Image 1 (cartoon, one colour):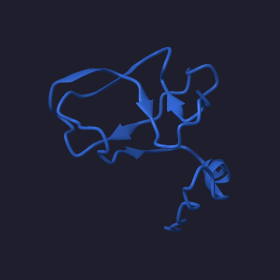
Image 2 (cartoon, rainbow, N blue to C red; image 1 turned 60 degrees about the vertical axis):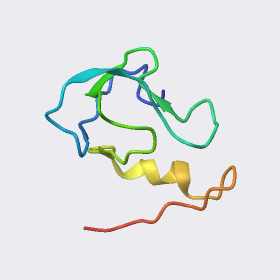
Image 3 (cartoon, rainbow, N blue to C red; image 1 turned 30 degrees about the vertical axis):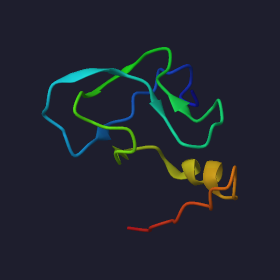
Image 4 (cartoon, helix red, strand yellow; image 1 turned 90 degrees about the vertical axis):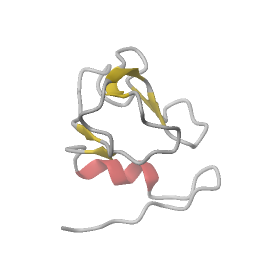
Length: 83
């Protein structure tokens, strides 16, 4: 994963926060081998989450948009929201 050998543990919020959890690997839809977080050190997420559920990954920093600034594998660039 792109998280310094998975040592960075981003806070992740889900619609099912507070429900029972299980170790999970988080993967995106791009079919790219680096579109995966916590493959070596699974992250505890609610068991009730389903494939395609939206999660909020907090504190990722300013540079995460550079990963998605161009169309890739048929996906348009992500929208940027300034708060």
